[in-house]
Structure formats: C-alpha cells, structure tokens
Image 1 (cartoon, rainbow, N blue to C red):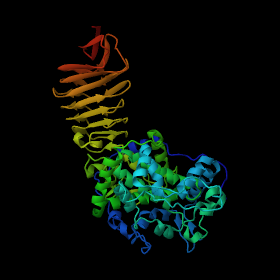
Image 2: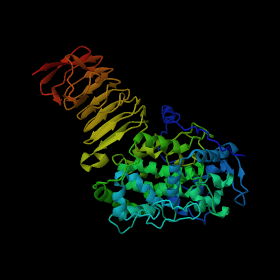
Image 3: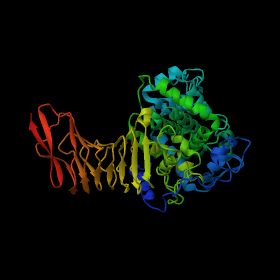
Image 4: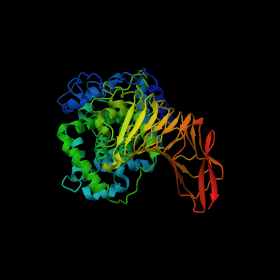
Length: 591
C-alpha cells in the first residue's frame, strides 16, 4: 500500500462520546459486572502471579504472560520467519496505523520534533519526572537525577548521542526509596524485548521511509531490522512503569504523571519511531507489570518507604519548576485520546468490563480510604468499552483507564459506603470525584473527611451523609434520588443552581451549608424538605442579597432549621430566614 504523505485529520475519540458510551454501558444490567471477582485466568495464568516468566527464554503465549497479554495483535498480524515476511491479517487497521504516523510526520512542528528527540535520547525515568510539576527541580536535586542530553547538538543529524545520566536518581540519595521503587518496577522482568521478538512487527519507517523520522533521530535507527521490532514500544513501557511508580509514591500528582507518560509514548509516534498500536501495547504491558510488581509481597516494605519519603521529604518542599501539566482538562483530553488513538472498534462493543487480578493496587495510594473491592469497582466503572484493537485481553488490562479511575467511581452499580478519616491527612482528609456517576446504587459518606462530587451525576440511589462533609460542585452532584443528612455537613459550591432530585431530610445534628455570591445561587429540592439542625450561609464577593431573595425551593416542607449562621455578609446588613409554602427566602435589613 502506498501511504499518503498529506495531512489527514485523525478522528479523535471525543471525551463526551467516551463518557457517554461508558454511561450507557453501566446503565444496563447486561453490562454492569455483578461481581468484581477476577475473570478466569488465561492459559498463561494470572499475570500478577506469573510476571516473572516474561523473559526471552519463554517464547509462547502459554509460557510468557506478556505474550498472552498482547495476543490480541494476532488478530491483526502474523509474524514471518524474518522481519520482512510477516502477514497482515487486518490491512485496514494496520495501514491506518502507519498512516497516522505519516500524517503526524507531515504536520509536526519544530518544537514537537525537539520534544521527540529529548524523549528518545534521554532515559525514560528521568523524562517522566516532569510530571511532578513544580517539584520537578526539587526531586531531581534531592534524588540526584541527571541527564547529559541537555540540548540538541548541531551534529545530531549525523551522530547518535546516548544519555549518560542517572535516570530516576541514586538509591543512596534522600529520596532513594522512590528511586528504588522506580528501578524495581523497571526491573529484569519488565523488558519489552521478548514481545518485540515474538511479534516481529516492523517499525513505521520500514513500512514507509526514513523521511518520517525526525531528522536528528536518523542516527538512532538500528541498522539491523531483525533486531528492531516495533510492537510493543519499549520507551512507552518504560515511561509508564516509571510514572506509575512515582504516582504510587506521590499520588497527589497521579494524573499528571500518567499524562507525562502518555506524552512520552505519543512522542514516539511524533519521532516516527513507533506506531500508535506500538504505543498502546507498551501502555498495556506496563500497566500489568506495574500492578504485578506492586502486588508482589516482596515489595511491600519498599512501597511504604517510597510513599513515606514522598510525603515527608518531597511534598513538604517548595519547588520552582514550571508545571506543564497544570491544566486538568487538557490532560484528560490528551490522555483519553491516546488510549485508543481514534481506532474504530473491530470486536464486540458490548462485552462487560472485567478487572484483572491485582489491578486494585494501582489505586492503593490514590484512593486510600476505599477498600480493595471498592477500588476494583472504581476500575470496573471507569474502563473503556470493548472492541478496540489490542485492548481486549482476557484479563482486562487493556481496558483500564487509570486517569479516569483516579477521579473515583464512574457508576454506583451497588451501594457505596465511603469512610474518610481526616486525621490521616492527604486524600483521607479531602478528595474529589470528578467523573459523571451513573448507576442505581446509594452513596453513604462516613468519617471526618471531606468528599467533593464534581460530575454531572445521574445515579438514582439516594445520598446519605453521616459524618464529615459532602460537597456538591455541580448542578446534579447528588444524582436523582433523596438526600439525607444524619449528622455531617452537606455543602454546595456551585455558581448558580444545585438540584436535589428527591426529598431532603436533615436531622438535628446536620448542617446545610450554602455558598451565596449572586442572585442566581439556589438550592432546588424537587421533593419535600424536612429541615432540622443548622443552616449556614456563606456570603462571598461582598454580595448582599436583595430583600426577599429565594435561596431554597421545594415541593413541600415539614419542620424548620433550629439555627441560622451567616458568614461573610457585609457588616452593615443582617438577614433573617423567612419560610414560605414552597421556598425559603431572606429578609435583608440594614443594622
């Protein structure tokens, strides 16, 4: 096939479409998993139990779990006896795979070429440190992480330069436990070479020409095609392994580190060195390897030491580095697109989501207040739809979306109880769930911590708060059911209207906290209001409501708040709550 050397717009998987498809899946009893018990093991056994069999000595799918994990590639490609004698089984997908590289090469900028050079020539563990944002310089200094590729030499188009730096740093440094965790995840059982040798799929420039390779990387091309397989991408595998290790230790930068790994993988395509399917395979491989190594009891003490060091020696510092990953929306869009690279689904699109054995460890520090079964439900309700090339492995590794999982549940398939102990600090004290939560389950919030709900939620079970704070940050944060406040603080921080889809019941121990900054701020209760306890009104931006302003509406009301507290109202004014048949209004007077 002659590949077109003109720019074609790659159809990206839009975030709204992805979330819509996920929501549709989980709304159906046919596709919501009724259990999160791991599926039956593949012929090679559960990956987490057999990851150490990933070696060049094991050359079959049954003996090498990585080959079994990536065996979906066999639907697309049959390796040949030599690097150039393989057979395309799905030309449509494989031709599109290479065409995407050609198109990107045709439209890349000089700055993108420079970024691709650095991500090619620098050691991957050093590169992903960028995901730490402002703490990047602090980490590199205290960990002793260095690189010798600080600029692009003038003769880089003819001479290959190798990084002589220290990768993630020194294990004898003050952050040595984090360095050791990175090195352990990238250990001897994590090589992509056995898979490259098995699938024997040529790199994109061997399907097209060297002209698609970034000019400064021409010297990096292996002169021996038989030792230079493309699938899966080794750089991508390494970058995700390093990023997941750092994210385990520094979960406060979980999504940013994942985004940096996805950027490095994407830069392999920009470089012309790898195809999208190569990069997807590298991500899937790294995800499974990271979970396996983090689940290994031999690494339990190291995990804790790395996390403790990050909390006490890194996050307590103030960094000065620029944070390239401070834009959450941009991170999410790019990471989500890179999960599938716009490929169409070629297999069944309705298979239930399954969660691999041991995958829950990947959320152990990011969602520490959930138990292991709850973390599996998070993974189950945020996974990708089935059907994409390479991603439908038997255990479910390819469909995991760790970025989305870091934002909490995607659906409540059953009742969910969350207990957060603020005395433990970190995410125990404060966390936010940003996914659009569907499903039929009920949410119960316990413990002294604060949980913020930020998605456009449609879950139909009720919401109950017993302790701490549950805050709604979107119009439909509390779903479509009743809300019961038995003793905590139900808070809202929405510009405009917040809707409670059913009744609102508050006990004498409960507090309802409303933030008021304009006349548009309103709590709309679609059912009945049964208030007791405290109503706290927080005024901001010097806002003074007009006399008679409505702050709460309801269908009917039984009872009144036992106390009213105001915060932030300009000192010249005072307010009084007036109960009407279908609303609560404010009587405003000057002192």
